[in-house]
Image (cartoon, rainbow, N blue to C red; front, top):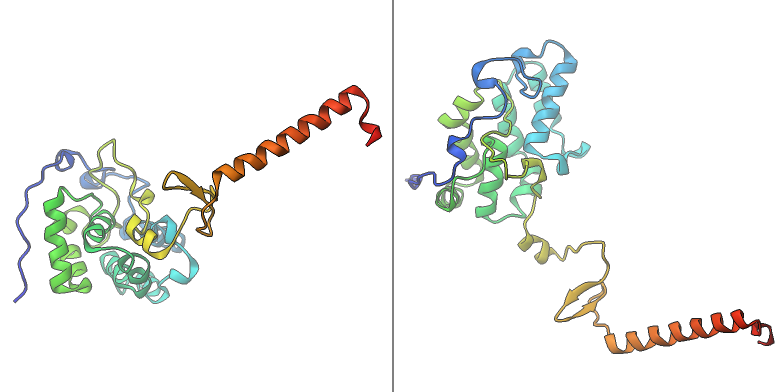
Length: 242
C-alpha cells in the first residue's frame, strides 16, 4: 500500500497571487500555448518549443535531447499536450539531466516549477512530495502531479504549462540551474573564471596546489623594482650603456 501524501498548509503568499497571463479567463495571450490555437505546422512547432523551454529549461535545449517520437505523435494529434509533457518529464534524457544530479528535496522544487508552474509553498510540501518520490518512484510521482486536480485546473489537456503564481521577488524558472551546489562540489565542477579561488585564507589555482603568497609577493616586488629602475635609466638618457 502506497504511503498517502502528507498534509501541509501553504505558508507563503504565492497561493494568493493571481496567475500570469489570461488563460484562466480564456482571452488571447501570445505567451500561453494551446494546441487548439495552433492552426499551422509552424504554430505547432512553436508550441513544442515552448514545452521544451518549460520542461527541459533553456539550459538543456539541445538537439540530442529532443523526443522525436513524442513530437510526431503530437503533430498527428494522436496524443494531447498533457501526454507530451508527461513523456518529456519521463524521458531518459530528462532523468539523466535533472533527476540524477539532484536530491529529492531539490527535485521536488524543480519539478513543481516546471510541471505546475509554481514554487513549493513551504518545506512541509517539499518533504511530503519527496516521500512520494522515495516510496512510489519517479514515474509514479510524475503521474500524480500531471494527473492532479491542480494541473487539470491550471492547464488541462491542451495547454503547455507556464510559470504562474510567482512573487515579484522570485526569479524566473528558466534561471534555476539544473543541479545544486552539492552535486557541483561532488562532481568537481568549478567556475572557469576566475581561475584562482579563495581557500583557507590563501589562494590556489585550478590544479588544487597551494600558492605561497609571501614568495609570490616578493617576486612581484622584484619585478616592479626592476621595471622602475629601467624607466629611470631611460628617462635619464643613459640606458644605451647597457
